[in-house]
Amino acid sequence: MDTPVNPADQALARLREDFQGHRIWRATRYDGRLGDWVATLHDPKAGIDPTVICSTADELRRALTNELSRAACRPTPDPRKWVRR
Image (cartoon, rainbow, N blue to C red; front, top):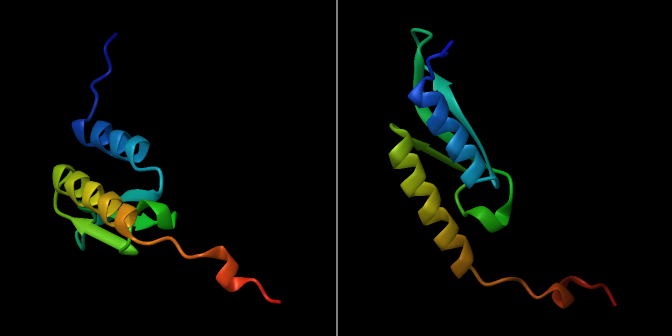
């Protein structure tokens, strides 16, 4: 017996697998249906913006890929700077 698979569920699972530094979910619209694709940053190494919202899974993937690039370019703080002497 073949169970039909929702392509949106597959896209969500792939995004969650590929961008583990974010919590990724679908927003709920005013009418109760699924709306925008949302990613909330949980690992500062994975992005800059705390929340990314896009209309489609593909747009969110592009935005999160850009976030990874932006985070990689950010200078890492010198941990010695924060050591109390």
